[in-house]
Image (cartoon, rainbow, N blue to C red):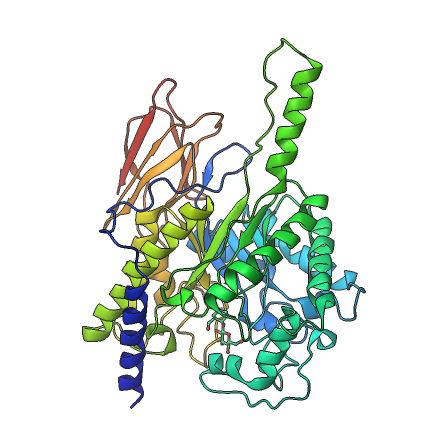
Length: 500
Ligand code: 9MR
């Protein structure tokens, strides 16, 4: 039966993950020491929001949303980020010719997010290589970049199995130049990213670039893909982007197979050229004004983010979250946490969950599952983007999307609407949501200005929130439901507890 197969799959994943677990006990506080994504004022950004959208995979490459949906998202979920789906096929319909009208359409939607104060991460999406690899099954690459050598292909159910079809494997093998025949494909992809970055470099809403959704190595996987093939490719794209954009964050994803479910990744470190450039400038300035001391530069640190996905095996293919299944999925939570925080530390990069897979709310345990991944993110002080915002992406019922087409919270949306600190004036050390209470603690860090901003949903805090804080100055903005807290001068650790 399918239930038995799901169980077997989950058990297999847990067993496999256990074998790659680092030895030693899990630290209770794995979020400690993780680097953070920061804003222009040096504040830590805890980025939470939705993926927009799965239906953008279609011919137009554009999502279903209208401006009012973005307004509703900010009001009802407090989103401060969107992972915005775009695709190579729509951007570069023929080699070297970029569709500026399509980029304008993207920019028009990016502006809707800007108006709501929502940061945009541009996600170069792909699944199963592209629509031309397997009879329209996938999305991503244009026809001209899809070379399958006429191999056969039959779309599979579940859809991920289509990755293993001969034509799809060959398309990837040519893209990664595993075949040694098409080095121009990766060159085109790099040049395409440089063009997109040049287009959005000055757009203040765009926070960064997610270089490739869920990379798949074709006939090379894990150790023969992530380190030797994917890492240098990311480095090439990053170098090209930095020629036109020194500031924005670059989001890199591990391979999806296995890692989405908790396997460790062997992705290597991508170096940010802005670090070397800033150091060189500093040396030069010091030489020019010898004796005047160091000149402060804005922020010469690396801006590479590890954007991992989380799809505990079982629930994303329609299983429940009860009994043995729940225990197995919880095992995957532990593995994912341990392996992804270890990878982020090894890569010296902040961790962000670019996709967390929702669960079908007609299945038992869906609310518990949602609360559990939300709590994991709180514990780690990492942000996430939920997959996805499509009201009917997975079948006809509206069971996955947090908001319906009118912008009203759905069942999953009501669980997801919970308090979080959008920006923290320092390094967050604790984020904890209880029923009707919320606590954040943080420590000061140098060069930070502006307040800590906490979003408080009306569903949890209907009235004016009661505040107990170590710091004296706060302001409640009832229209936007944001509580701002300014660090007291001289204090190094801060704490705030909110009750209703
Ligand atoms: O949820 C999406 C599903 O409806 C599609 O059939 C499938 C193929 O396009 O893609 C699913 O979305 C996936 C996303 O593109 C990448 N990460 C995993 C998502 C869930 O499977």
